[in-house]
Image (cartoon, rainbow, N blue to C red):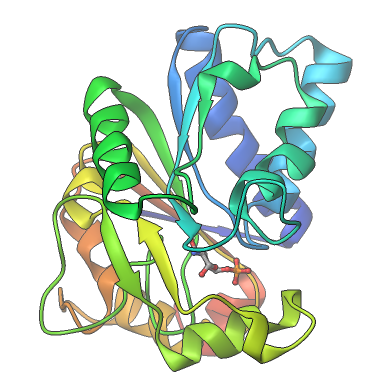
Length: 244
Ligand code: GLP
């Protein structure tokens, strides 16, 4: 696992964008695995700028997202489909028909079948990941076991707390989500994990300062991926005592 400590957030987002840009330049028709949450937002802004000002071309790129809340339609302003349109797709020249975010409404089992089939049909050049305060990746919550394939997940109380800031009230946060499974995340050729946002100290410590690989902290699974890069700021690295 390669760990990069950025001097500040601006540098972190620039470095993250460099890694995604490299994939798009190498194969203009590549598939990107994308993530939501506040952590990748700065990187998306930088990619949009490069598209606008430097001609970075997404016209043939496709994408698959990690997860979606169960019960929220794509038009809901807290759905991850809405988030992706708003934070990235509306600002780059990607064909939205080539972007996939699992459907949160309707027949969830059928939606999961479709989600698994889409994942299986694409080779993701790189999968972007953020992490939850409890160490979740996508919506794979800590527990006795993790799952290989896309499935329905009940959100932990700490995840509901963490995501409540985006909703009018905590009660409005969906209790379930559709998430890519750990095995499917690992199938991407490269992983790019951005540790941003707040309250990530405990999970970052487990990831960077221990040798553990544990279902109690799902992000530790990325240690076994052959091409896995982690990006964090110096501020967080100093806070947890990570020296490289
Ligand atoms: C949600 C998403 C995760 C994301 C996490 C962290 O729970 N399902 O994929 O990593 O939020 O979000 P943030 O970056 O805002 O801390």
